[in-house]
Length: 264
Image (cartoon, rainbow, N blue to C red; front, side, top):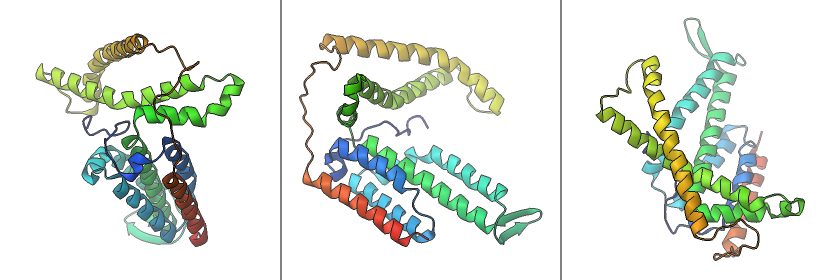
């Protein structure tokens, strides 16, 4: 499961999503988080799902790779669906088995909320899969630039968020290596839940040690390259807002208009 973790990873490529300005991608992701709450019927959810599938195709990220990376999310989606089926008692009964009844409102809400959650996770993953950490930092710093007037450490905050995001897959890989090393020495990560938790505890100490070690190495590397914060810092890569970024923004605005049009 650790090897399949995709959140925070970057997949090199030359797709349309890879070439979009990071500021555009960050703004559109924020807009998508709002747009995903517009649908309230089957037609609008179908439109949003097709649009998200189109984004996946445009990213040229292998669908199998994306599916494998989201497997652990499916359990959360299943739990969300079951909670609505068990506790929402509105509408007509569509299924009954003994004392268990599935109501129309519970089934509808369960499917819609689960689909909304899945679409959000897919779109968020596409951002990290198609945007490097440097582009992410530059984009966030530019968007938060007005806060500099309030003496807000915009550059440092953007850098910390980018590093934290990119450290997630690194820590997952490190955890996987430690687990395999301990399994080679006789550790057992199977069996009852209580035994699994007890076996996971010894992972924490070497994981914390390696995390601090990597953080120290990163800090040393940044100091060796003359990093002294954002004050007076120039940029080798300058962001350019191009025509395709404007078209992407207009497409998202059109999507929102269409969803409002077909909304119940």
